Length: 574
Ligand code: ATP
Ligand code: MG
Image (cartoon, rainbow, N blue to C red; front, side):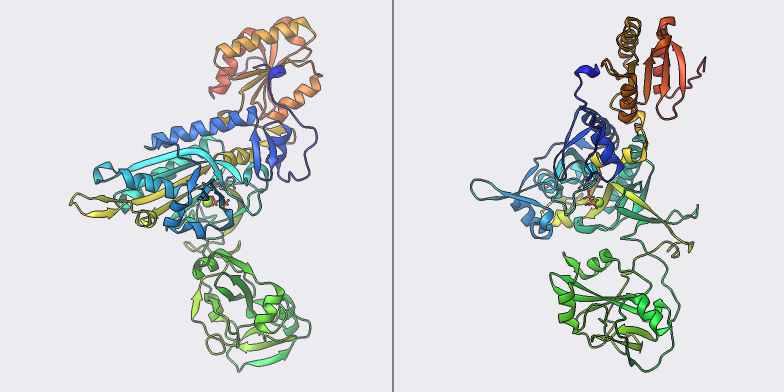
């Protein structure tokens, strides 16, 4: 391919809305263009990388026994009514009507459709297990589409579904997929971690997320640094050891005046008590009404745990007016004593023997409050967010945390969808059993962006070989010099003949512009044809390290291939 006829428009300036590096670089280097919020066109360079990721994913899915299919994006609402998710999925689901007024949606995922397919075709245990997958656009009307390809409203996903006779079959396929995901992300050059995950709206029990470690990640991973432990979980799911520390000693409850003192830190300082002796009361709005959640003052509430416990679809902090209406006091003075809202109490709160809580009236708190005596603790559960330094739930070592981009997630679904959508089979004894399912997703476009987050420098992207849109670029420094042009053409042909994916930068641009663009796009290998062309020599440059070697023009093919194959390339003349 010649760059003069290749559609790879670079940008000098990136829009201010491009906050993260992958978004900026993919725009600047001409991989993507924005159409609308969370909706992008993949330009030829972007599409090439996407196809490489897809090819790796296909190989690994096929190797694990997957069979590729392609289901429609447009899904009848009827399927979603049957699973109960039409209501549950909420505003993220793109809904539309056909000309007859019938409801449809654009698939955000395909559990319903694939289960209905299998329900209609599979009768006997002899047809199981079955692993079906597709690579396709998915649609989610995300609340905050952002960060370019990292969180789109239209994006490309690989989704695989496993169908088994029993749980042990599911387990086997689940771990097979775990291995396959590990190979996919390793081959994509990602530094990643598989972590325990919450199952969210999809349902099911066991789940892992594959997190590409990156500052731009929206997820927080909590992990144990102890080499032999290996505990790692999404912070939404992470647990820690329940503190056994009793705080304060029982005394009768007492009302104290706390004028203008509302935050935990202020209250603790005002009363001369540690913040862990304060019991924090947060009021949330759900579709079932308001609820109050209580944690120790030095902890944060984990809203995912709270939401799972309550089994609600919506959970938002209540507004100041709602708090005032429910408690009779402005925010900051809410407390559980005499409050007529359901109280969800974190387990650790029980160990506070003389707590401080808001008095549900302005400028006042109760002190020496004893949970169980002064307010009910019927809804006692774990709703606290784990923080770095908390002990590992497995080995007790202090936990650490990093940010991650969720590039894939796998779930053990069990029989939730098969029962709802009537996917049964007859076992060896002729008895009807629900098919046991798993589902497994990889964000193809998100993986592309995650790779850029991890592989770049100030100059641009540094593609791992496995994903590079072109493996090499041949760059004549002065196109107007016939010698350089000719050698460049020769080297370009030679590389093409060897099957190297190569681009010839035949533009009549200043050398500086060409070098900058080559670094920006991130071709792993650059072959520079400059002043040594006269002696039949060119320079091979390794983008990742900036190392260069001079090579005779006739040996470029061999050397570049060797480099690409990861063979031991011993440069003869450094
Ligand atoms: P998130 O928590 O980031 O919203 P999710 O858990 O809802 O993602 P899944 O339903 O597990 O996503 O989808 C499988 C995979 O699809 C994810 O692991 C991710 O790689 C990708 N993905 C999900 N949502 C998006 C999106 N809005 N843009 C790009 N990729 C996405
Ligand atoms: Mg997920």
